[in-house]
Image (tube, rainbow, N blue to C red):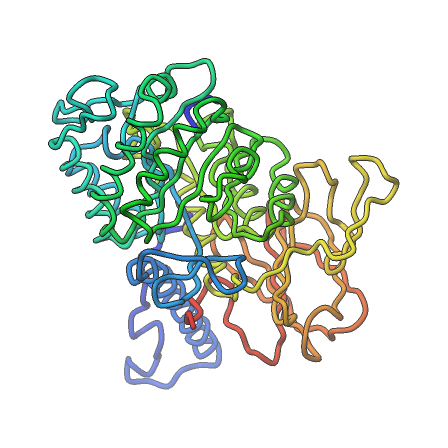
Length: 494
């Protein structure tokens, strides 16, 4: 974390003159009728996109927290057993680094964009901490976990409750351990406090937050716990003594997953992936991990760091959701630490791109998607050899490459979604689509627009090429189901 477009969405409705030449009291020509139909079609498309954007935000707002593990153990459901896709943002310093007005500004912006989860440090060690904007630190005695400062936690309570009002859950870290060899986290204080005080700290947290619906507990972060594992376990035990309502997860160092450091603890409810490298490799590894549990891409490259391009941020998101993740998080510098310029960063490219991503996946049965790795083989045996798979059979890119095409298919064959990081021709085994005809769409992840490409028989192989350069999403649906355009409508959650 620390180390290491939508186009104009305002609804434009043509005037009556644009629709109806007879509005002027005269008969219309053939060309005027054609123009009328084109204007009407454009208006309807605008209305659908406008409603989809707002419905995505409403879906976040109407979730019943706390969430829990779904029936297949591949995704989450809310308190009403409706599938819940985590679309997360990274606001690590929200509690310590923002005023109440700023926190509400941030949370409202995220709500409007459809984000439903945000990562937050309950207590900050270095970045915009440890004192909050009111000058209150988390402990009455610096670094002593047995001396919580009530005034500090009253502000933390307010922020978490405000997130709940906005329909946003908080992935809450009670002790951020910090990157190895730095003073970013609380690792030294954790070791000096020891298991007894760490358990007392957990007891305090569990009692205080057991009735807050919108919390998931996340332990660790940015490093392996090492000798502090006993202390981390003590914090968890303390929390669980008073709070058995909320899920627990963890984050390790880069290129690790939570199961690598915490898989044997007995309290890890779901896995997290943290990688900067060949992201899809680690994602598929976590998808195939046993025992089966949901996983989310909790962190990868942030916008504004490491010279990340917009397509890199989009790649990470689409790779995650098409490699079986139950959600994914985006991050931005300066937003994660509420550093100068964070307000403008809320509307930077990554945020608007994620708004589009949310719309796409909510318009299809995302919770039923199975990664396209059936029969995956490496042709030639080398790490960079091209792949052969079950649904998208050619044009996939390289196993260790940044042009890798991630694809997934619903278990009944009703929908196939493939993300192409760059324009190229891909070959699809059409027999993997249910029904006799498949409706083909090209979805633009930069603008949110969808272009119909026709209907094709669901037998044999067929090649598809995007309309132009750039990254694209190929969506193929069983034509008999008459699915709306990708991203244009949010499917009801059963």
